[in-house]
Length: 427
Length: 164
Image (tube, one colour):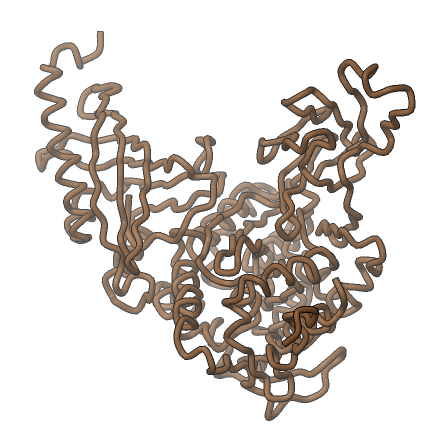
C-alpha cells in the first residue's frame, strides 16, 4: 500500500451491504472513529437540544456536535443559535455552566464579550488591535441551526440540505405522532438520565430499533409489570408490527401499530392500570375527553424511531448518543412531560421513566451491560463479521425503503447504508 | 429546647453509627431481605439528580416507595437481570456523621459515603452525601427516608447494579 492511498477507501470491506455484515474494525479502529467524526458528524444534521429547554430569552445549554462542545441559546428575538464554545481570541471556553439563563457570554481569560447570537460585542482595550480590526469577523463559530417539531439540530455543513429534507416526509410524520404524547400540551423535557458506556457509538445506533433484544435483555423488567402491561410488550409474538427503513439512515420500529396515533384511541375505555390516574385528573376539573387524552399520553405511543446519527424517539423519551472515543459513548435519556399539564400526570411520567431508564432503572443498566459486552467481545475473533442480516429474507417494500418483521435488523441496515454513503464522500 | 439536649449526644451518635454501619455492611453483602427489614413501609428511598429537593416533581435516579423498593430487590435477586448477574462487588465506608436533629422518635442526620465497585476487572469510585430520617421503634431504628446524593449526580454516570 503506497503512502498516498487513504487508509479507508474500501468501505465494502467495512460494511458488506449485500450480506449485511459489519467488520469488527467498525467498533475498534481509532483512526476510523476520527474519520467518522469528520465525514459524518461534521457533515450532517446533529441533534443538539429540544426547544422546551429554552423557556426564556437568554436560556442556554451546553451540548456537543461530534467532538465539538457547543452552546445552544435562545436570543432576545426568540431565535435559537448554536455555536462552538471557544473564544475567538485564545480558545478558552466561554461557558462552563451546563444550563441556565444569561444576557451574554464573556470569556474569563481576557474578557471578550459575545452576544446571545454569538457576535463579538466587546473587546477590552481594543486600541492595540489597530483600526482595521473587524469585530464582525470574530464572533463565536456558528453552526447552521434548524428545528422541526421542537427538535433542534445543528450542522457545520453550510451546504447540507434543509433539515426537513434530511429527515424526510415519513420521519416528519412520525415525529408529529410522537409529540401527541403531550396530551394536548406542548411536550417538555422534564430531566435527563446520563450514563457513559464503554462502547462504540454505533452499538447504540443499532439498538433503538432492535426489538429482537427486548424479551431477552429486558426479561427482568417485564417481570415487574402486571400481566396487562406485560401483554402490551408481547409485540414479538403478535406479528403485527414492523421495522422500516425511512431513508437517510433513519428507521422506525412499530411495536404496537394500534398506538401509532394516540388520537385513534380516544374512544377506548381507560386502561385498568391507569384508572386511578384518570380519577385523580378528573378531580382537577378536566373534561372526560381531556382525561382520556392525557391518560393515553401518559402511556406513550407504540413505536421507537431512530434518527441518524445521534437521536432517537423511544416510546416516551428521547435517547441521545454522543461519541467520546472509539470505545466510549455518552448516553442521555430525556424524560418528557406535558408543559402545563396536570401535576399527577407528569409525576406518573417521571416515575415510569425512573422505572426503566437511567443508571438505576430496571432496563437501561441491562442495555448498558450488553452494549459493553459487544465491545468486549470484539476484542476476539477480529476476522469474524457482526451480523445484521436478520429479517432480510422476508423484507417487503415500505414507503421509503424496505420494511421487515418487527424483530428484523432493517433499521441497522438503514443506518449502515447511510454510514457508508457518508463515509464514501470526501471529508 | 429540643429533646436532643436531654439525650446523651455521644450515646445517640454511637447508636446511629452502629445502625449506619450495619446497613452499609448489609448493602455490601447484598443481603437485600435484611435491608428491606430496616425500612418502615411508608419509607422513601431517593437518589436525586442535581440540587433540587422537590423529589416528587423532578426526575431522580430512583424514587422508591415500598412497592418499588421490593421490586428493585426482587430484580436483583432473581438473576434474570444481566447487569446484576453477577452484580459489581462493592466496598463502602460511611462516616462524617452529623446528627441534625433528634425530636421525639425522629432523628435526622447526614453522613458521607465512599464506595468502590469492581466489575470486569475495573474499579470505579463513587462518593455520596447521605441524608437520613430514622425513626426509633421498639425494634431499633427504622429507615423513614434515605436520600443518597451522588457527588456528580447531574453528571455522566454509569449504570449501578447495587444500592447506595
